[in-house]
Length: 355
Image (cartoon, rainbow, N blue to C red; front, side):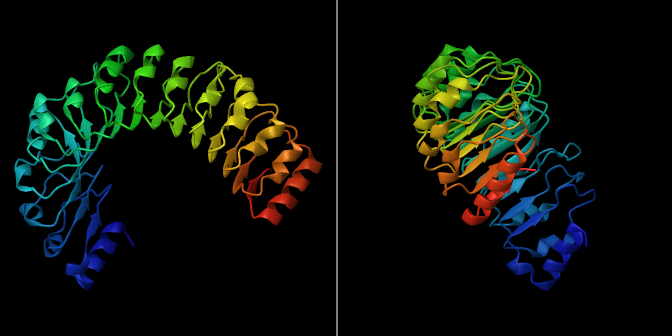
């Protein structure tokens, strides 16, 4: 049964009970039967071939979330201002004028924009309640300064679709966003430097997939970080001092295989991460040994070191009854060690991948 058939079946059974509908990838018009769903709160047609939004959608008084990201063929919704209850919007914008209309939706808390625009209008500063903003694959050469005028912005995700952003300009804007706690940045040829230390407010930082070759030690001054993702880069090493990030709960350095990242400093300081719950080092193709004091990581629940050079594990690992998931596949682990790990995993209910 297709997604459309499932939707229509639910509507026929009890249209007033429908709270959310999904038409992702749909290649036709929104069915007329949807008009019966007067209690609809969420409508998602992202990346579909729908080209027109029927008038009845704007009449859904309870509609809070509407997502039409990636809808390249969709005629712009000229009556968007008639959706005053929206708190979450995903929009495919083809011009700055489209974003200016979005700025009229002053109740928005969450906004995602796709399209081919390379800047944001100043009027966006009307979104005083906006908490999260995602700019996906927008070819922006500079980070919009209007972001500093969004007083409640907590989560920001920026993907420039292969265009390069100047990191100094990024910091100049974002250090003014006092409530910004989470930043994800994907841009071509990112030049991370010492100015990263100015973003002291950050708790989550995702710089994966940027081709980074170096970690500036000033990154370690972000003591509030609980999540750090530097995976899918081209790092040569992890500089000394990473243990200063002692509040980390999630650390990802996976897929830094191109330059065979040297993880010795991380291994030497791993015992300092007493709050760490997730550690991803898979596909680094360089890790030869886990430290004997890894059991000092008493909160660690997920350890993924797949596709490395481990031949054995320290005896202390068998003391880590709190581990829930351990992946060691694509390592030259000795057969007797594999069996010992299987027995230990079964006894402690650990999800183990070792073959």
